[in-house]
Image 1: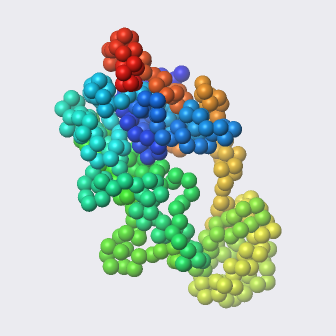
Image 2 (image 1 turned 180 degrees about the vertical axis):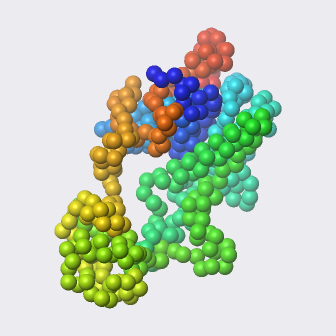
Length: 405
């Protein structure tokens, strides 16, 4: 096991009291850079992500959720019920010995538990507390609940999805999977690092209020900025016009983007200089835009008999902007992922061995390393409560009997 002093965030202590995706992903990014993250889960139930698939063999099991296992590598795990008096005291001691607390309770809940920022900062003035909620800590929507589907559309991204659609009357769509939640976790991680840096400089902590709605609006900020300044807001009905678009091919799709004439010339060469493509009307962007309904069906017809790889690599050599639409299988098996060591085998005591995506960034001096797989529920209770916070094993047994842990 590599010495943690060689990790970028070595020495940074984080408490994660959050579930599902956004909060845990925020903490995971810190853990992957070397922060010591203690994940706090409810006794017996644990994180909701434990009940989300995929599961190996399609057999649901709280220790075998692919989502949970991915989100919680490199973390320590303990159980705690902070709604009980003893649990509250444990949480206070844990926060007092940490630099950062990440939580995703509805606004006001932590205050009701006596664990709001004011209470925690009294015990630890240098503490950074990061609160991730659907709409933030204040405003008329602050108390609103929202699942990931709701927050995604509250950030207006559904209005522009899919971009360049040929069906302008189609209902708004959500992007695949849990992209919106991961995006919110990434935004929260950036904010956490900023507050952590300020803490090191000033010696003072602060409360970071992360609104998922605002984080997602940030992804479509051009639309928001346009409307805010009296400009018609673009929508999915805005096409790529003569510049290309999504093209089906023999084994999937490629995205063709050819705004420049040299890019069009490269594509024409790849297609073997078909007579129709050498028409003078198509030599300029303006001409291709004007005759879009003639150009695109012919490109599709040609692409239908070629694979993604057969189109992509020749296009790259000729500086024609064509990108294969990669599936999960394509990415996992790609030579690029293998060369960077992006997919690694990780062994878990309950789930067994899985291949996981690892860190999306490579540090030359402080590289990503696997410290531990995702924790089993309450796996590190004794290590944290006895070994770090000073409770006795008898007190540990009493807490377990009372439902505190």
